[in-house]
Image 1 (cartoon, one colour):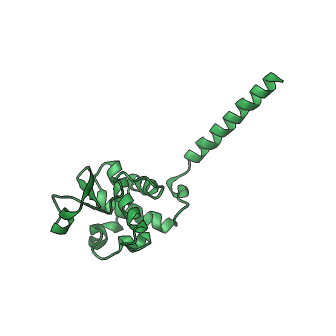
Image 2: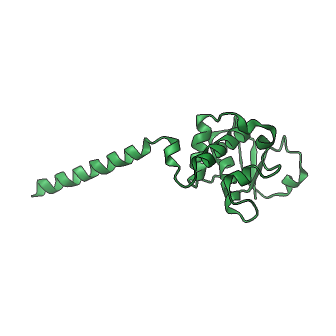
Length: 152
């Protein structure tokens, strides 16, 4: 009886581990259940356009800013609404958003949509070497990742 119980416990552990590993092998596209594929793809495109050349966590942070804006009453309540809001994102304005994203941008979109926010709730980001609006410098900086300052 004791060996049978131990065998069942071992079998349960192996089954649970197999299920967990199988879940981790899904592609990024199948991991997104809280938003449509078009939102996921659009978020990856804006991440690519805004954070190309930045570290991975910086890409996630750009995605988190979009997601924070979706949740904020100060901005549109959808991913496309936030991204295509007039003058909100340079890449949407200059066409870089139309470049096919790299795999890291898709991963970053998945992580941001899943709730990872390395910015501490930031609603804005900017590169101080390229920012042209003095207004952005009045925002409270929550963190710096790569070349971007993230702010509330």
